[in-house]
Length: 135
Length: 290
Image (tube, rainbow over all chains, first blue to last red; front, side, top):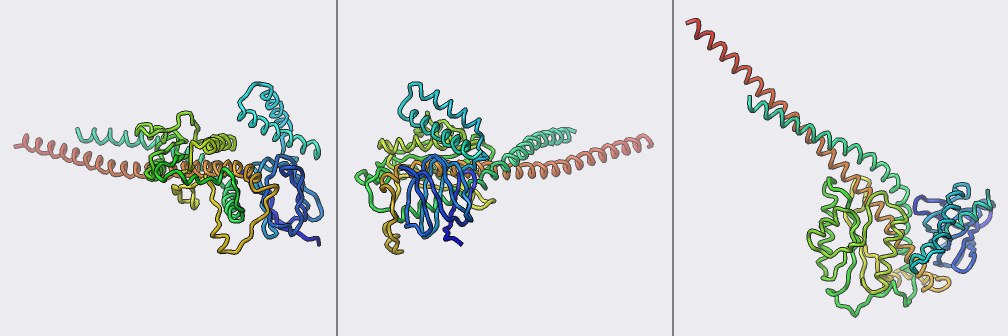
């Protein structure tokens, strides 16, 4: 039996996972970030992208959008706007969202709008990436 | 005869109103079911968000970061306070709107520099009539809250705080304390406060913020505020439907009671009219006999 830690992954519209986990890898602010049992106490942000976590020796995958993560006394809490399994992602919708965002990026926008569109594009791209990889 | 007609028309009008209240009861109870479902789905996130932020603030080291700026140089009464007030789009929800608005007015007594951001038509109209300054551009509906709407609201509030157009930001909304009890609440959103004393009291160490506390907070705080506003909108929407359902149920019940009473009155009037007629006929007939 491998060493484990308690992991809670909660999306804003449903609790995604709660239970023991051996390893968690998520997209951090500057690249992928891995967490093993007995990690030091830490707080950091999660970027859009793919997370994977190992339960009973088996990797599970999900697409996340921005959020944050807290590691305290061998308990990990990941809070994100959306967390989706690869099979739940609607690839067509994500593709449409990507095209829409690209279209908007071509137009002149205020800085705030530009950041919004860029965030929308990132969300769509990370969804597409995860579906392509696992379906 | 006149009273009988009057009672009948009264009964008819009560029945008509009852049809409306009953229909509204049915509508709000089905909307309520939907709202409850999204509340149940979001509540774990909302609760965890609040407790995690609490935890993080407990373990945060000292940092110079805009979201922690207390701006103490500004005197208490002069501080620019922004209130996000969540009301309903429609009335007829019992004391729901009234309670939120009353709480908002109480809070606003703290200072004179108040800026209101009102969600929902009822609140907008109310404050507009009272000549309170409200942000006219801030047009959001209270119905079917989405993450997208929460993101927009959060961004505009954060922007105003960063530009120093607001020194404190609060949310006033109705929370479903238990599944049967909505209650108006005030939450402070910004600035955040580190819990230095509490941390020392519990002897908790600082956590490691990667890559740096400032960078983490830059990403984390907007995310937290967005999640908070989303949760608030969902709680408020569910409370609204619940309050309306209860109010309409009470209205339908009292309409039923009224109809019952009126029916009794009507029957009594009818009976006495018949009795009177009979006694008139009898006395007329006996008058002919003699």
